[in-house]
Amino acid sequence: MFKKSILKNFSFFIFFTTFIIIIMCCFVDFKYAMQVIGFAVVFGLINTYTIICVFKNEFFAEKERMEKELKKQVESSTNHLTAILNNMPMMAYVIDADNNFLTGNVEALKFFDIREGGQLNELSSDIFERDTMEQMKEENALIFKTKKTLITDRHVKLRNGRQNWFRIRKVPILNQKDNVEGFVVFGKNIDVERDAKRQRETYISTLSHDLKIPTLAQIRALELLANGNLGNINDEQKEMLNLTLDSCYCMYDMLSTILTTYKYENNDIILNYEKVHMLKLLDEAFAKSVRVMHNKNIKIRVKAKDKFVSLYADKSQMRKAFENLIDFCVSSAYKNTEIICEIGKINNSNSIFISLGFESPYVSSETIQNMFKMYTTSSEKMDKVGSSLNLYLAKQIINAHNGKIVVESKKSNHNHYNIELPCINECKLSAIAC
Image (cartoon, rainbow, N blue to C red; front, side):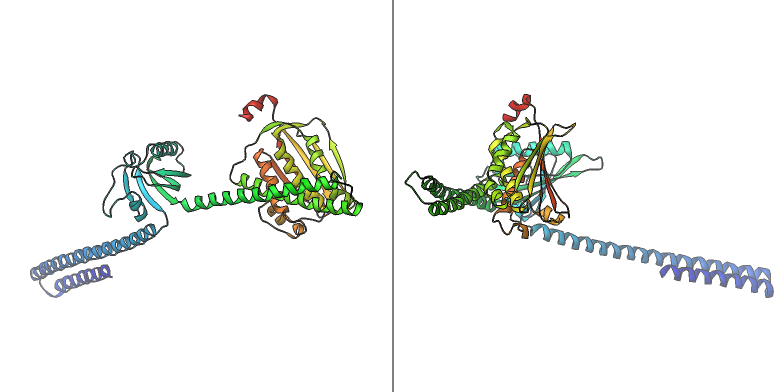
């Protein structure tokens, strides 16, 4: 708007001067006209100078106003960011490449015992215990090399005696040359989480021990009674004992499944590798479900191109996985049908495959995605308690052996469970065992 007023005044000045010159040239003598023109030029220059001065003052005033507005916006944004950082339930701070502490939120200042407005020059061995400092240096070296964010759970010890478990997220700060010049560090205290985990471990261990021991005692006592070792029993009594024995077996298997699943969840399982003949292992796994197969009149047909297919695996764990899978297949299969088990080596691959095919109701893709998740229940599983946990454990065991499982279901009511496992050469046994 101000520029428009300047142009308007300047245009009026040009028009007025030109008009005066024309009038003077037409009605007044040339000498007098030149005097008037000179006066008009001087007046125009003074007017132009005045306008320029005013424009200059207005320009600087507008510039100052814009700078104040921008500064106000920056301060407002900074206050918002500071409020967010200071109210985060974790510490956040910035250090340079030499571990010099640059700035941090309230939680970080409390952790390092820095008063507000104070600074800490260097995060060194004077602050951290030696082991913690060495871990930090290793992390920094890795980030310098990869230039990627690092996330880890770490026990942090300070020289003042304070120690906590933190979930650390360390983000590199890259300069224009794409080199790491510092780090943004976020640390969340996970002491409560770890305490809860330890309590859960104690609870699960106690529960498993207190339930498994008496259950196992019941099984052994019922076996003695059912086998007639403690005296003759009639057929009705034997049938009742066998039903009770089956219930105890089921209870014992469920307890074992819960305990083993928990160990896989916490990476507490140690696999004991040995050479496993898959046909023999599958025969043992099918034997576990022979009673249910007999009741449903389900037959087993095994197709093996190579009867000596073997791999190196933890035999007891692998048998547990296939027992769980076969048990679910038998429970899902229609009566008076057969389960076709195929086994062989995959061409041009150092792997073997095991396929379990059977007739059962169609399973949607959404159900297939969820069926191996813990605590997932669907209508297909309602008739068998704990089947979801069994399938979850089976998948965890197969994953631990670097294998994979794929489920295919067709609307023609034909389902296939395809398992692929690496077939490890004997020369690699010693390396695996280590």
